[in-house]
Length: 141
Image 1 (cartoon, one colour):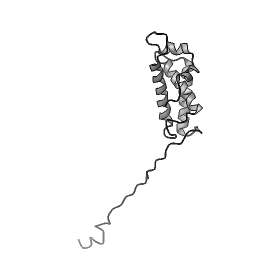
Image 2: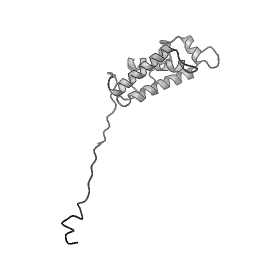
Image 3: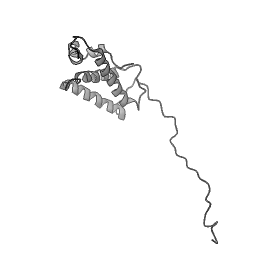
């Protein structure tokens, strides 16, 4: 399951631009493999930030997650060959900044399910036998 699709990406960038950034063979069409790599990379980046707080992958995909995925994937598409345009870099940096806020708990994803709690007990228990040698047991030695 991915957080965005090619159609979502076309909602944020013209198809001609996607072709220009992904068409390595000058065929005049979108290279779907390159787009899928960008989408997969965006999903992985999002999951790496939110996994401590939310179950990943987020299902159903919230609008916020989809918007973040689109901005990140477009940045990855645009930066394949050279530096991405400043507008795309700014949107990418805004997306990462928001993901950091989610990770720190400053922002939330209200529709997303919380990450499963760690059910293990993190307490430490130390036990030992009673003292063999003490002042009383060693008297006279």
